[in-house]
Amino acid sequence: MDSESLYREQKKVRPKIEDVLNGYLKGENLKNALDFVSWLRANKMNPQWGSANSWSATYRKVRVCYLKLYNGSWYIWPSGQRDEYLNEFINDENIKEKVIAGIHPCTKCVHMCNNGDGHSVVICGEKYHHTCGHFVIRLRDPDAATLEHMKGLIIHKNNDI
Image (cartoon, rainbow, N blue to C red):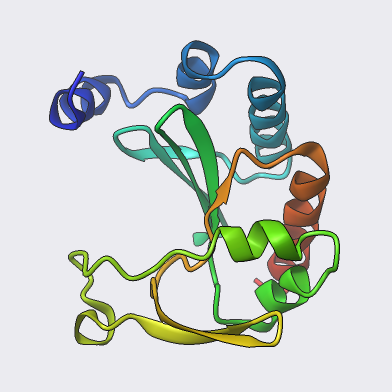
């Protein structure tokens, strides 16, 4: 199904993410995704459908992350990539490799951040140019250990909301 048809179909019903995950992922990825969504719900951050295979989780009306499904994988896009919380998360030695692999370049999308040039950020002590201005980090198929870090990041940030 093409993305426009998927969007129209999902827009009619605004599916719960769990309903889509069960038909989209398998094995450890399905387990990790369902566990993370369950954790979000238990902590009053109910993912809400936003677009084709895309859900936003908020806490007190502040977005904490996006959950996306595409190319056979699931992704977490943490919000607030240019704040101290994400920097603390990134500087953990156990997650640096995954975070660096998840740095997303500016694609000159509709937001046209910085006139389409994206942003420069310092991650793990190195400067990266032309990165996405909304979700610089996109974690693909995060494992259980990465999800524990993500939960810590979200809880830490939520304490200030």
